Length: 473
Image (cartoon, rainbow, N blue to C red; front, side, top):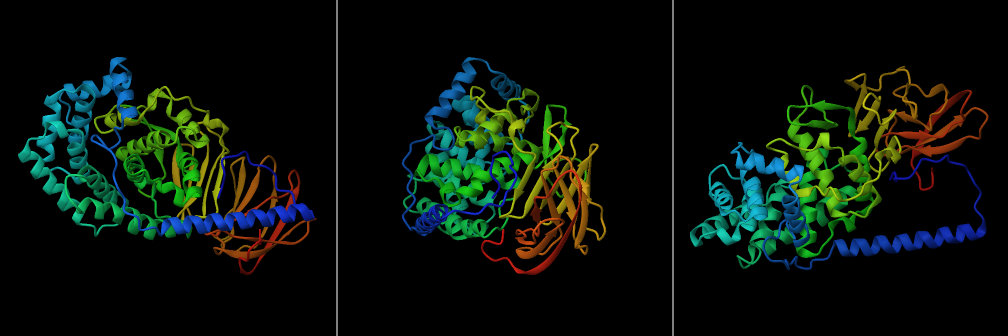
């Protein structure tokens, strides 16, 4: 996978005997680590909850931070209080009122949250939050009723979608010591059957099973399971989670969207028309949740730098509760201008390139078979048409090889050349003018990355020679 480090030139070197030995030792160590990881993934140990209410997201350190925000009358607290006290119609009323109750201890809003959670409009996720956060206000009749509803929700395990699994997981954790066996079975199903049995093999196999719009639901699962069962699900696929924050950052279109309540950064989408502002709000919410899950990671510090611009603070009735719950304005961040403008994830066949970090930058994206170009404030779908001219975005040149197998390029400052439209996971013979012929492999998206001479016209010829073999690159 791509790593969060400055891009460097790729020089071909001859390894010494000692270097070969160290490389072999490294491979053996990596093999042992993979075996240990797979062994851990197949563990059938019961998933136990060790915490008291409130369990979901509001662990002691988090609730102390939120109460301190209230004491200091921070902008995020003032925004949420204005909406809740002013009677604004909150799209997720149970979530907003129960959160407000936890911070203020005002029983009026806790009781409102409970009444809403027992209404026909209530969804399983918010019912779980209200049950967990408003425990001390529940009457016995309300407790029985809400327990029965949550139990029914976790019993229906047919839907494997991330959002559905998230809701069942939160409900099972909230219910854990209120029912004898059902919450335990639901948590085991989440961790062992869904995550270890379904998601981990798919991710290790290069399948894009975590859509961008599903990321927030996934991070709610990660927080809830780690906080309450002391299990970090990221350990099964550490490479994926190390890369995801940077991929998420690069997968925004350059231009921002000015709405009535605040400005939004818009993430990649296949949908035409006006941006989905709820999806944009959850995109920021998952960035906040990523930082909260691992504040020390370099990727989190970059995201924090991305999040610290207050004109993107979520102020609307939908986003304000998420903003207040997850934001930590006291956490230092690093400038995202340090992040390379090229992101190539070979494991999943994705490529994102920006010409700069400015809002008027040009942007190219290739993901899940979709190809897009953002330029001069407009998004344009692309296709790898035969004889389509290369695209240069200052940092990289993108060529289309639907039929053509010969290219002539002059690189100036570009760091790399990417050839798209080839067959995935195939080996190609590459001939570059004045250089030795070599073989290189395409990734799972059919992308071939080349490092080429700069400052002069250079011809490139490629020819498919067969499936990718180990060491082809």
